[in-house]
Amino acid sequence: MTQQKPPQNSIKNRRLLLSLIPVLLTLLAIATFWYSSTTQPEAFLQLHDKSYGREESIVAQIPLEEVRDDQVVIYFGIHVDKIYELSLHSRTFSADGSLWIEWDAKNQEYMEKHNIAPHQLLRLVNQIERWDSVFEPASEEPRILSAGRYYQRFMFSSRFYDDEINFRRDPFDSLILPIVVEVAPGMMSQKYQQTLLYPHHHQNGFLGMSGTLSGYQLEGAMLNSYIHQYPSRFGGWFEPAFSQARLDIVYHSDYWSAFVNWVLPLVIVMSVVLLSPSVAGSMGDVRLAIPSTALLTLIFLQQAYHNDIPSLPYLTFLDQLFACSYLIAMGLFALFTWGTNVYSKAPEDKKDEAMEHIDRVDLIFQVSSIIAVASVAMLAWSATFN
Image (tube, rainbow, N blue to C red):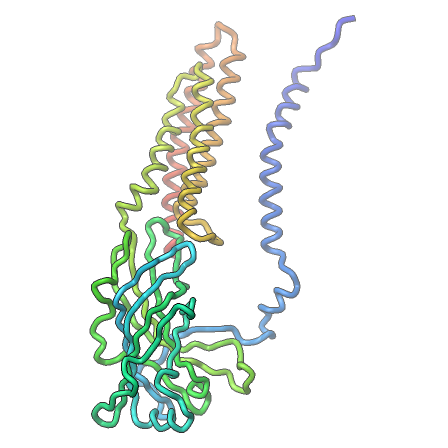
């Protein structure tokens, strides 16, 4: 007896099901990640419930001319001599410089009454590694100015944590390095005594000659005052509101350097990928090797890129370009697989017709890929302004 061959439609359906397995697995993985990100433990939800307590907030301080009679003003100034040891991965940097404060006789009486020394007035909020830090007065006693005002200058050298880093436009991002100083004593931030920090009226410069950073261009610096409301009473009956002064030193990337280092290699790899459909459809082995090699190159490029930045809960501008490039390279591999099968299965008298069909599909894919890359780049860049 002769063995009966399975029907041709059954073979095609089986192949179709096998080809859909990677797509189904990808959709299953996306659904799993989405469900896990939207479903949180009950204990976590309780911490963010409105009944749990007041949320921490930092709001702009009232203008100096609107200060009430029951509020006390301390003038604050700062000058940064140098910035060094920037680490984007740990979001830290080191800075050396000076800061000074000026207060009136009324505030001095309050400090003497509660045994508050001048060096106890302030604390560096975003300071880390305090064991290796310096914060000391430049003189043993504050200097007495005209009209009975007091002046004290401090020297600092410390490492700071940067809470303002935003990598959404990376590698074309702006870098903000903050130095945050806050009123330290709780008794100076309570209901009956609130001390407010305001920029010193003789502040005429923030940075020294060593305020530059390698790889970045200095854009400017801003000193502003805020009110920091903590979500805790610290064991007391009143929620203190601490006044703080924040110096933001703003840098921006060198766009040409960032383009050459990160975007240009990606553009070159994708140019090779998008030109590969121009290879004749009969050269299936050569065509199949191009997208697979491009995928490996893209993976290594992105890994090298992420070695310099921390783990992020969002995609950077360059990450979105990488994601689009992955999809195009994978789609190109599927296209070349299809084209190789079509050409190899075509009868000899219909090889030319199969080639023309493959070339038409290749052209459509090329044009669609270029439009997709341009659209992703524009949408990703415009999304960073929101």
